[in-house]
Amino acid sequence: MSNIKEFNSFNTSYRKMIENASNDLTKILIEFYHHDFQSEPFLVVSGHAETIRMEEVEEHGKIINITTKENILTFTERNYHTNLSNDAIVFSSKFDDETYCIIEFV
Image (tube, rainbow, N blue to C red; front, side):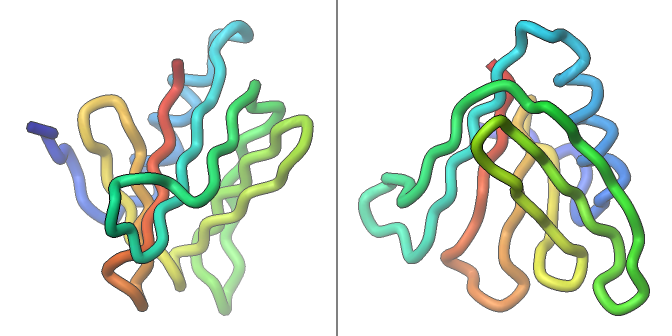
């Protein structure tokens, strides 16, 4: 059973990502689920996080950008709730309760 530590705090999720990514050998595993009926992600990204940045833009609120060698992923306060569940960071859509993303550092 997961332990939700704090709900809907982009600052907390960002700090956890920076803390987890501080080791250059740490890989990031990102799984996207959309209308998930079989507990299988529709997209999986795995690799080293090259950059993790947070900025604030008036019309979107806080934005977290994660860059890997092949991808740029963006999560905005306008579109996502976020929480920590054990050591994972979870982003869930504000508009669809069946769309979410789980980020783990392995």
